Length: 213
Ligand code: E4P
Figure 1 (cartoon, rainbow, N blue to C red):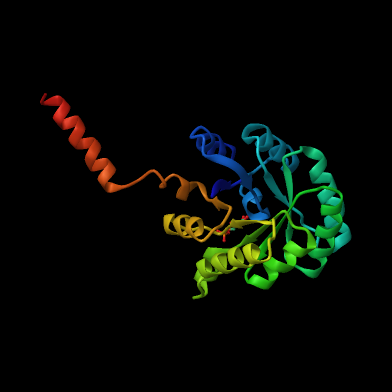
Figure 2: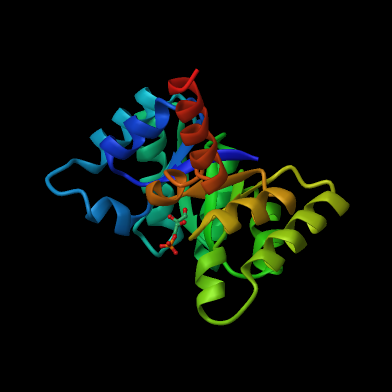
């Protein structure tokens, strides 16, 4: 499973990119809105140049025609751009047209398996099931990852699964073991992925022993 970071913040992306673990970035309108005084398009290009992998930028239109127009504009910005499209009937029309034009798409706000299968059949490059938001309403986000993964394997579907709405390290583990191709992870969770109390204890012990050699 590859790691994407789920943010539009350059400091966060720059720091984690230095670890060598980042394969791409996802943004959404809420994440972009947190970044004050930036141009959305300039920021996407900046991220593409830095990370050198797929960078999702989301459309705002709700009608297929507007999504297609926005998607074409976004795709022109950089060859790493992936056009993020919400899981709606209009969204599927846009995915069909954009994918036929060779533009990569990420269908977002997926909450069940048939949405994922439908997006894949429309031509989506990626689907983004939201784990945390399902857990928030008492459902099993992780089960959705497992079922989409099984369905895509059974039917030999090449669309990649991006486990999204990740809230903790357990989600990263769960998505990986259930076959998600990618997890898009918020900065604060990525920062915790190197941690284990026994690692800290081990380092303290090594240094202590070294001092007493
Ligand atoms: C995915 O691409 C979304 O940007 C994201 O994972 C949403 O996560 P949230 O539920 O924490 O807002």
